[in-house]
Image (cartoon, rainbow, N blue to C red; front, side, top):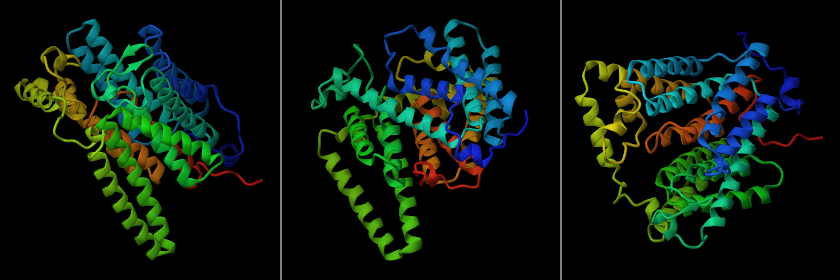
Length: 396
């Protein structure tokens, strides 16, 4: 594949959206909004990632693709995950889990390797934001917005079915992060975006998912610290005042949450049994033979040999399923991505994805923010622009 080069005219002026962009945005919208949850068979949703991969490979063959370390490592990771799948016992569950792991990595490889225009990047980003707002609206349609015991007791209903409190919390956190970035960087209709951001932020708090909450806080910290740094270059005294106010605001927020019905968000007394899952997974890894330690024991090994909650820690889960090689490859994807991306918005989204690896498995809610952060940086880096222009309104 040839290297992709984006002209300034394509970057700035081209309002047209490619079919690939529309499909990626549509898939991300469906996934984050959960509008098809309990409405369509799983077989239909399984076609999403192969469709994205196929369309973007075709586009790459026509116009070229971007080349950088994280993308090369992702391709190697997909190939290795496929090898792990082949080396272990075949059954339907193993095939589905292993195949999903392969397709997630290939989706990352395909989307971040595409040269998106500024209009396309914004379209995909706003599709994710809108999807999360829709998801919050559906959640509050089925659950009383003022009864916090619903999420706390695990009785939350979504599209007529009971769901785990974590199911939709990550889209809410991601949307809150995008909304705050939009409000900080400027753009039209700030009142609308502000109201929508408050809505998804409340949905995040309502869900009482600690993982999503900490992911969001990490991203917001990056955005705020970047703002303080920019202010410091012009007015050190003002920046110092802002920093002090930020510290006081976070401290007051912690105290307020700790002493409210949202206390689960900062309460470390209960880990929902995850410490047991982590201990069991670590013992599985230590108890495996040399081959298992290096190449893994299979994607279903942890679930088949444990009657407790899973480890919910990406790196330990990968140690068990794909061995030291698989875990190292995923670590390298994150390391090379952070080495590449610059700018507070891309770093905030990538940090959201990274923090989630300590709470849940590798799925859309890790790959989507990682993809968003990377394609935002790629779009602006190709043209020597600042990512702060992402939400800027062009003057006529």
